[in-house]
Image 1: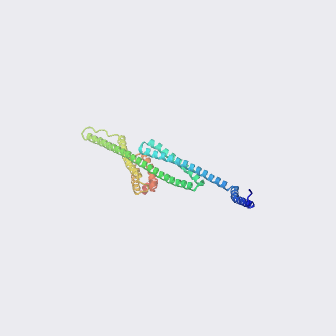
Image 2: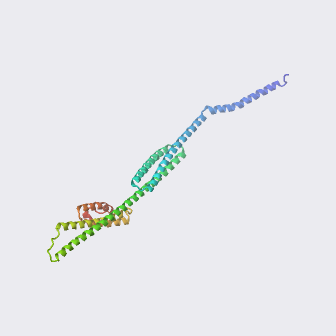
Image 3: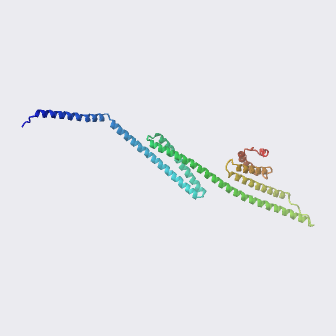
Length: 296
C-alpha cells in the first residue's frame, strides 16, 4: 500500500537531512580550522621542549649537589681524624686533602654559577643561587677555622719554644755558677798557698783568666738573651697590636739593647740584631743599633 502522505514524508526527510548536514558541518569546520594551523602541535612541541629542559637542568643540579655532598663528607671525615690524631705528619696530609676538597668545591661552585645564569626554570635558578650563597658562607667559615687552627699551632710552637728556652736558661745559669765557684776556689787556693810562709805559687796564666772571664761573660749574655727571647715569645702569644703584646716587646727590646752595649761575641751581636729587626718594625722604632740607643 502506498501511503497517502508520501509527499509530506519526503519533504520532512529532506528537511531532516539538510538540518543534520548543517549540524554536522559546524564541528567539522571547527575541527578543520583548529587542526589546520598547527597550533596544537606547536604547543605540544613547546611543552615537550620545556619538559626536556627541566629534566636536563634537574639532572645537572642533582649531579652537582651530589658532588658537593661527597666533598663535604670528606672534609668532615678529615676534620674528625685531625682532632683524634696528634701526629704532625698525618695532620699535614689531612690538611692537604682538605685543601684539595675545598678547591674542588670552588670548581663545582664556579660551574654551578655559570649554569644558573643559563637556567630557564625559575625554581632551578633559585635553588642554585641559594646553594651558592650557602657554600660561600661555608667557605668563609672554613677560612676562619683554618686561621684559628694555624693560630693554635703557632701558640703551641711558641709554648714549646718557651720551654726549650727556659731549659737552656737553667743550664746556662748552672754553668755560670760552676765557673764562678771554680774561679773563687782557684783564687782562694792561691791566697792560702801564698800566706803559708812557703814559696809563692806561680800566678795563673793570663790566658786562663781571660778564657774563664770570657766564658762567664758569654754565659751571662746567653742567659740574658734567653730571658729577653722568652719575653718576645710571650709577646707573640698575644693578639697583634694589643697592649700586652706591645709592653712585652718593649721589655724584650730593652733587654736586647742592654746586651748589645757590650756583647761577648760578634755572633751573639749579629743574632741579637736580627732578632731586633721585626721587633723594631712592629714597634715603629729606628732599625739600626745607634738609633736604638738614641730612641731608648
